[in-house]
Length: 393
Image (cartoon, rainbow, N blue to C red; front, top):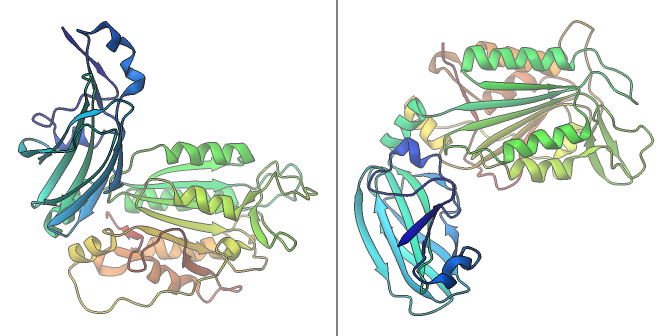
């Protein structure tokens, strides 16, 4: 008798719908063990491992009609077979068995043709003792399909941290009101799903970021992260910091502060293809070791759909800070900070008749502030990408 052990969700390409496919993990989805041999009872720990090299992301967009599939397969037990299955999320379009030989390691390379719409690629590996693992990648191909997905199946998220009450630093007056006002505009005008974290401790900031690092995002989803509160620059470290509620004033090692280096790495690794970080804190411009200048304006004319496809088809890691290497104003009590006031004005105006607000347009609202806000990129950002705000009403 053959028993099946299912981890996460069972993978059956013939009945897999697109909505179901988008809940899958890129790790092993299905394990099948042949229990005819009692020695196979312990096989769960000796199954093959599939490591995707291209495409690495579980869900991607592509305007190319083909993809070079690459994966590295390892197994403690010799491999019996490797199969590649290609479908559209509803039905299989083909299957190929790879001649790997009785090996324990195999570098899989295969050129695959993609069709317009959804392309679900599944790798299935079986070892000589009957252990089977499989893993999938989903590629949405074609400008029309991507445009449809952007219009129908895209979500925008905003995570806002705001601190105005400090244990060891002077309190501020506007950060929480600023964050809540931004969240309200993002939610009502642009359809963002928002979460405001008020007066978080150091641990609470990193725990919340960790939660987002474990979320699943679709290729066209966007994530905005906002920090408002105290910022600090340490000359001896040559680095900027965000001050948490419980940061110590005389912490020479800066272990109670949120370093820009750590923040940059954590945010860059959140599995959303499109991330925009806005920081209304002192010395926020030191977030990037080399402060980048503003990008140029777009040239040429495209339709709104084509514009969104182009901007949301490449990885985005952009930042906007309220200043460079200097102090910035918290503003008058009961009023917004100068930076937040201009950001809210840009969001409220909503990008004009095309309903699309870009970071380039936001920069025109804030660039006359003193000190001058900084806009740039970090991580593995693609220069031609952008973070866009698409007005719903």
